[in-house]
Length: 341
Ligand code: PMP
Image 1 (cartoon, protein in one colour):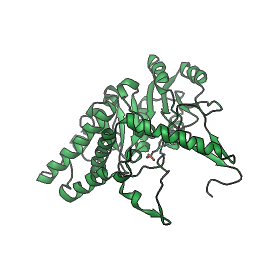
Image 2 (tube, rainbow, N blue to C red):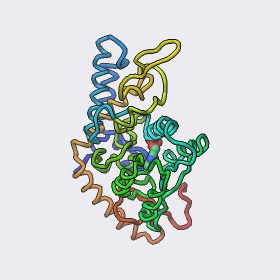
Image 3 (cartoon, helix red, strand yellow):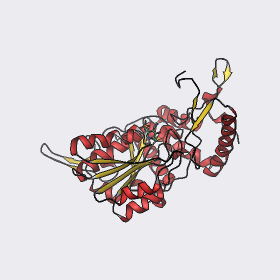
Image 4 (cartoon, rainbow, N blue to C red):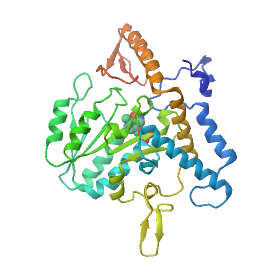
């Protein structure tokens, strides 16, 4: 399998050498299919969606909504459950600011893990400040994996309302046993939010099979554009949540005194959305599907084993997070050298 030719940027030379790009956990490069979808939209059908009546707008709306269908199918959701956001960070903030503000009370417990990204800590710390919620963290074993017996004890405590954890850590790449905890949380009516920012490009995700209430990811980590992300929310929950942002396109009726909101998913999509970016995200999902997750993971496993073998041969490096079930993400230190150097 050689997909290098699909990525125009890889033809760029760095210091005169062919490019090798290892920073995919931060953002992935874009395949030609995504670049083409975005540029074709700007060249042929740029217009605003859902509001303008010109012929271009009909095409733009159709492409934008088709991308929602593609994303819904990509993760096994219904189209009304796919909310386009700016990225994982905004998706998690949407849950905290809408669901959290309305349904959490002082003293309610939110469970995170010690290996969360800032975007899945700060919104909850903000709710701690404004509402007095309590945050508890699942501790880690020395190999970086979750301490599952501690996690289960935390979940069994009274007043736990939310479990918000990543399916895979951006630092250690360990794939966490989220399904097991979701099952326990569900049995206790605890709402679950999965940060899939890292896992989305590597694992075939089916939200109904996982059983989570919310799932967040960013388009740019799976080869789509920046500025677009997704919040999946279970329909029954989204329906009882207040809108996050107010503005155009999320209202069905406005007077000088009050307003009523549109149906899902538009209730949560105020203002002109990232149209080209959503279309690009749909193209990224199609691109990954055209290769297939089975092929992707076989290839990644080969690269992972090769990298691990070579790293272990370098006696001056120390690998962090050694639990099995890893995404191909490596964190290591080099004796005596600061990471920035
Ligand atoms: N969660 C995880 C696990 C991540 O790796 C990242 C990005 N590094 C984020 C959340 C935040 O994603 P974004 O910056 O695209 O909103």
